[in-house]
Length: 349
Image (cartoon, rainbow, N blue to C red; front, side, top):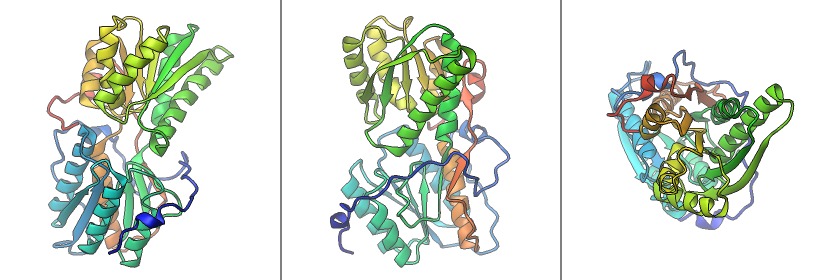
């Protein structure tokens, strides 16, 4: 199959995350109920059709973070528990490699393609090629341009989670002014943007409700590339340029776990509060349990998203077509009050 790189340049509108979208998979339980498992136990999903031998392909943007590893494990175990063959491809953090990896899965004739796009625009053409080959595409964890051809998007409720975390932070600070450093993943990432929107919206709405005015100052935004090392470097730079920062809000636990080293080295653990809009990573939950400077995080369960994604593919194989364009796992805030309930030191993530 010829490369799709030359078709990437066409400008496309970005996907708007619609907070009111309804779920395509009815879940009565919280996403966190599954997240605390060390791994999935291979969830069996009801199917009228014989699934044996069908192939589920999953393309990850990379495997260099615990979240991506846990998500892949969840998809693999759920796929194999239902008698299907699991095929995976790793984009290795490079968009051209992710495109090639998707092309390889399409060539292998998967029966469904689960795609976690590194870039919302660059993978659009891949979805069209898959569609022409009769392969349904399911976007998971991240988002894609609406011009893409896909069945549904399955992710955590990034806006609602961010709002919960932001509201908590505003209550914590009360009338005290918040001098905020924002640690983001990478520029233009739609999921990060929605989490950031939720965080700031939660803060401002709570302040307006209780104070009647907004009392915050976002002094800087720094990018971490979703890595520990990136978080540490970003925080070191922030502390030099903005020593008056008293709160760090972040789009993901991984963005700030490395930053903690920089905060501790600067002797600022008593002066800075950390608030994460996602993910419920076990290291973050441990900090929340044991310290006062990591205030809260919100649940983004890779286990539940993996299960929901395979379930959606099985539903499609069984003839379901009336999917909503986006479905969410349940929003959940983790604080010192409930952290022990969700902490599992044996968890993959």
